[in-house]
Image (cartoon, rainbow, N blue to C red):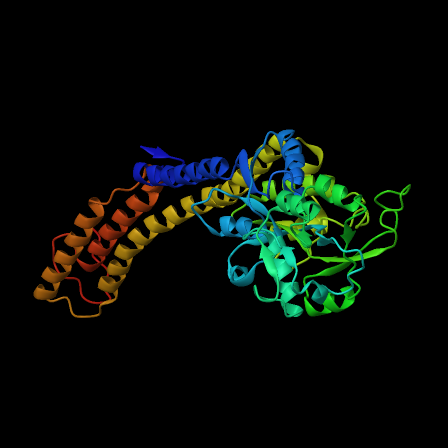
Length: 442
């Protein structure tokens, strides 16, 4: 049996190849589907990180993707979770500058999404002008694992405040630190968005007994620590009626990045960055509209998918179609196009290769016939016996060949040429024919 000129075995081999290609395309279609659930590691309950993540939950839910929030002690714990493969965490908010040796990990950044100012509140009838003035004081610098503590220690070290002999360090979270400051059991507290809630910040800013530290040396700190930015809290921006703050206050702070594992699905990367534009794209006291998210590269490289998003936006389907439909169409094209690229040339090439194989099998025996016929040795009885044996061997091998019906003309032509060479070298009575002579006519 033959199919399109191919033998049964050739047809089965071709179908097997195409079947493997189709199965590969089907596998890729389902394997490449974006997961329907993501996990984000954030910050303490009530922190800015936590509140922003809850906004992401609503946006992703509208696209049929579930975002699970995993609270943490802050940026350092988020970073450790992302680097720990046993933790089922996909993305996390991480404050710039807290990476240390973990910067050499394989995590990627989806870009910076906000400034994270450092607020230092203190109780003092006078104004504290320099961080070195906090020497010997009781300082709440945040719990271990928080970005607040990491940045606070970096700043205090620049002012030679590094151990218990130079200051008393209190490992308090934002709520306990605020209570300690109000109760007078702490002289100053360091607060940041990964651990402090906006409610705590507003409460302290509006308390007349509490003052906000003004970083008069902000330019120097940002030159010394590259990941810091100088920020300004404008006069009256907290409460215009009560003129809080009473003057522009200089602050410093890093940016917040969304870090992800390198295997984050490209479609989910686009979805998260679209959500980031909605959550972080507006104007606020410390940023301009459209300033974030931004492809600001610090300790981790911006992922290729995020770079593409910042340059050209969402993919074509994701701009105009619902997320699930865009994903379906994208995967369908992703499976079909390579499949067609393989199958269409294959349909043209495989029959040609099979024909070449059949021809090579017949050419092999034509070569043997040419060698016999071109041999100019005298046709002695021994030579005749040798030629006869070789012709019989060729004829026997050719008769055992399995040739498709579509190549029957080549097969029968080869058999006729074997008979022609036999008659060319030997006469009908088996007498030797002299070299260069033709057999006598019967």
